[in-house]
Amino acid sequence: MEVELSVVMPCLNESRTIAVCIEKALKTMNTLGIRGEVVVADNGSTDGSQGLAEQAGARVVDVKEKGYGAAYLGGIPQSHGKYIVVGDSDDTYDFTDLECFIQPLREGYDFVIGNRLGGTIEKGAMPWANRYIGNPFLSAFLNLLFKTGISDAHCGMRAFTRESFDKMRLNTTGMEFASEMVIKASMAGLKIKQFPITLHRSKYERTPHLRPLPDGWRHLRFMLMYSPTHLFLTPGSIMLGIGFVVLLLLINGPIQIGGHGYDQHFMIVGSLLAILGFQVITLGLYAKAYAYREHIISDRFIEKFYRKFSLEKGLYLGLAISGVGFGLMLYLLCKFLFVSGEFYELRLAIFSMTLIVVGIQTVFSSFLLSIMNIHSGDR
Image (cartoon, rainbow, N blue to C red; front, side, top):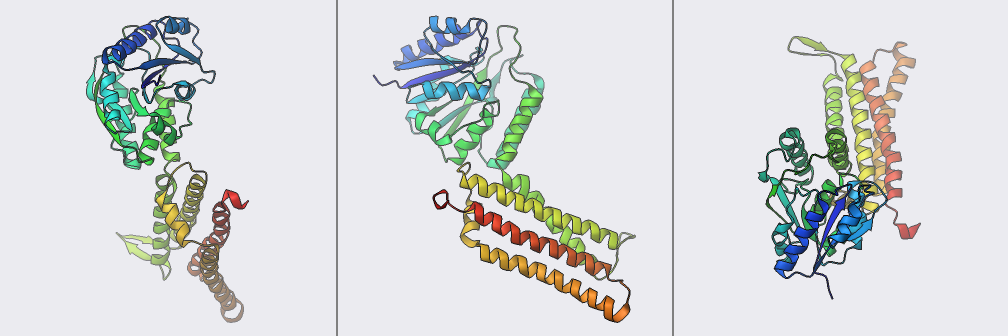
């Protein structure tokens, strides 16, 4: 008969709590009249957790690849439920709350997540730094980049439909799996609900699987990699803009600001910023084009870009920019050879050199962006 609910728990040496978690889940499903199962995704336990889980009534799936995300990626596809609830097997999440997670799914939500920060965190349940610095910062940063609206993006207890799991196309194997799920749920346009829950203190002294600094960096790195706009385009545009403003302000001669003089040496800095900014922008376009081509992320910006962009337009723009630069350089060369015999026009030379570099980069970048827009069926 059809299984309505699968409760999937990752497990790595949780012999003291795994049976309690399974019993809570099974008893709650029986009380609610839910046809369900408990799947334990064991990640190489050496303390007998597998046998205890089976005795308690769970089905154990052995996952050889290590990692929080790897355990879920191995366990969830082996489950059979229409709805899936996931949560840690250390008895810090309360599996008697299953109805709060699956009822919104029955009502049409696709993804449900608990909110520890807006709920109750028992004393000693979460380290001070994680509670007041790590989790709030990472959740806020994730919302800044992806506008998910999730207050506690790293809560370990969450639920989703099987169809939604397939849409998210999750693939990270570490702790960043928690961030990936929230980000991709938002990107996939899933209907999301969050509500306050209680995080309980562990009844046993145990070594946490979470490593605050390395795992925090994994979350941060993943977020940046999935947001080429903030990683590349925004800083690149700022550098490019500042660089050309400096070049244009100083091209006619030195200026005085606040009693300080700014001359040719600042034009060199402006040129460096402009060239570096343009390079970073093109890297961002490559990243967006690749992610869009490989269906990693859905990106309206790159869709609009490719609707207006063509190789020919890129070539014309690049040749025009570099042509102006070469024209200025030719003017300076003629002036040097036939007029003065000495070279004094350093400001104009810096500006023209910058245009040449940016123009040539535009030409070759246009070729690469066009190559990346070739559909796989055209290869």
